[in-house]
Amino acid sequence: MIHNGFNPTIHTYNMMMKSYFHGNNYEMGCATWEEMGRKGICADVDYNKFAADFSRAGRPDALSELA
Image (cartoon, rainbow, N blue to C red; front, top):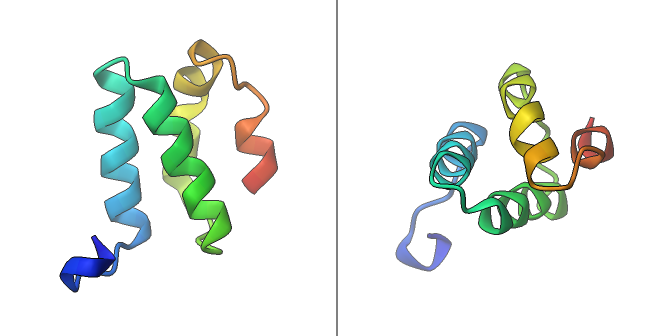
């Protein structure tokens, strides 16, 4: 995205993760979450929505890593 001149926001990442998790692509959803952390993007209230998704992905601890 950035190489196309688009700088993603927390809302962009939320939508990406929602799409990945709803499509059962847990690996990409978790990778997106980790990318947020590397870029210093702090989760907002929407991160609560992803708790069940991270649990299904085998990463129930993922939310506490960024909180």
